[in-house]
Length: 38
Length: 206
Image (cartoon, rainbow over all chains, first blue to last red; front, top):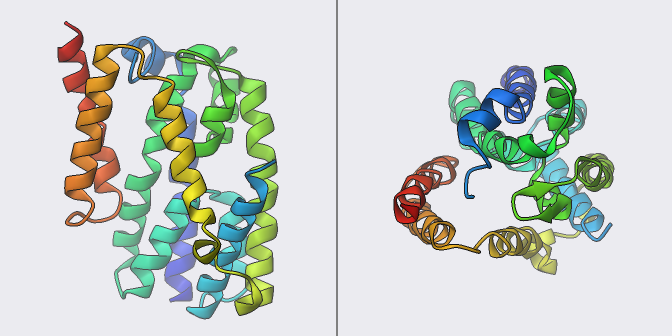
């Protein structure tokens, strides 16, 4: 259990950082214009 | 500041649940400090506690965290600077901060975002540590009704965006997709699937 927990922590550290970092990039804003709803 | 106490209590419930299911004292605290995503953390906890594999836990948490991509895209036009600055400021994206950072239709203040997230981050850490160390002496947020606060914030966020027909159709279809899928789909899927409602909203605007 503890081994799996640390694997999950390591993976999600990278994944969550990447997801949060990618959203505000200019290419994303340009692709979606003014956001997901507007 | 009103979010700090419920955030701390939910963080405490995570700490209590993690330590009682055999995570030890360090792992929950480290996870809250560097992952800082309550829904994703609870997803990992739920999957591993139920006997699921670590891959399943990571996939479920990733699906849940993927909503931050859509939130980040919405925030992008309000941000300044290059890729590195945007990537770092994007780390401040958490659910409740989005509504507090809203300054107008599809407009957000980055300083507001940072100012809203920082107290929640501190509250989440204090709550997790208290839960790990305090155990069952921490009150259950659900019994206090504090778990309703975050859905209320989401509702307030959507309410401010319903200014045109396309947005209203998007919200209605997204709600329908989520309500249908929540009882039958794994955690995370309903949130991502509901994003497809944007297509219906686009069609309605034409």
